[in-house]
Length: 271
Figure (cartoon, rainbow, N blue to C red):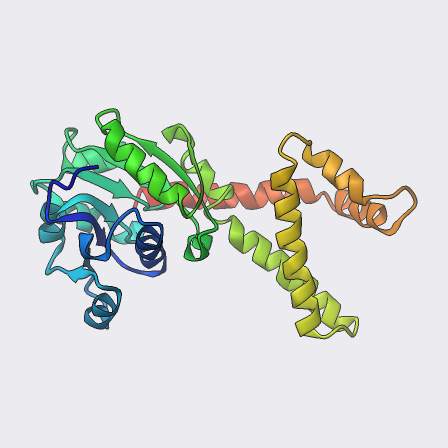
């Protein structure tokens, strides 16, 4: 993608996710440090940007008009105030990772002529193991979308999905790391109550999660139910545990958790 403005990629908001994306984009070679600009009024931003080699600009409007792609990494609660500040600015392309905020909503404020890419990444982007769902407005150029897609794909796995499913995608990758972390926490606590040290329990649980994920990835054509069955020997220990989880209706528990997650994502999109 040719550089048409002073900076290739600009961030409005440089919290944990924004910083993870910026660092990943540099590490993957998609963007040089000097091609990244930031606007964030938070404390210590001067020091952070100097450390990272990013330009720190004075406000949202200057950021958007200086960058080819402007990435919105703010909270849903502040989204509209940020968009209002950008109204009328000369914007080439908006990339939003704001939960629940639709392309239509962004274009209603900024104008239907503004190309918008919408994304749902997750925190493992910090270690280049992220999962990101993306979609785009009809007027987004293929070059811009390919650039953004490639950038996120270099930090893990990326998939394009229809925009009307973007809010639901929060249950696949956006919020799901917390599900796995919480399950690991419960397993570690239970192990400790059974006399196993927290260090040993954590090490074994972490490697089991990593190994299970890698195995599932390698066996792409194997139904997940068969992977479960491979661990469940007839009359063995695991089949008893799985039977208990089914009796407790784990599937319904997960569905209810997902319902609550999606409901909140939709509420945030209306703030």
